Length: 151
Image 1 (tube, rainbow, N blue to C red):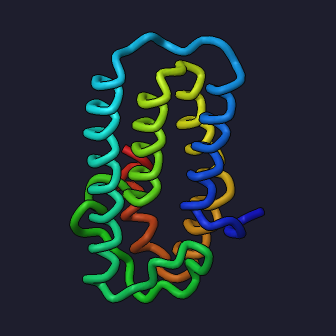
Image 2: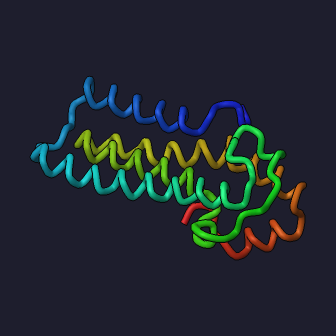
């Protein structure tokens, strides 16, 4: 399963599971729809901005954004948002999932966020980090020592 499922699809699947569960299982909070939409929209915009900042940094460094082929990276990006998190695109997806959970107003939907984080860490980030370690060696190790994986 390593690096086989595109991360946007993984996030979408977790979102779909949360939505299905919220429709068929009890426990929805009675929050005004205006509040749910407003808060969820703000959180989603933050997530999209984090994700796009990661893409922008990769584009500026002229390296691949393709998460299924980390071995094709041509540069180790450690500037911009990558000074704060090694995985801003995945952090952005997790933040959008948080926004989706807020919109659904179903507390168990929040479990999709750690579920996504665990899945991504095991099946996407781990293989990516092994590939980057082979490509960039000590430089990547030093970067990992300076910057946290998620936050």
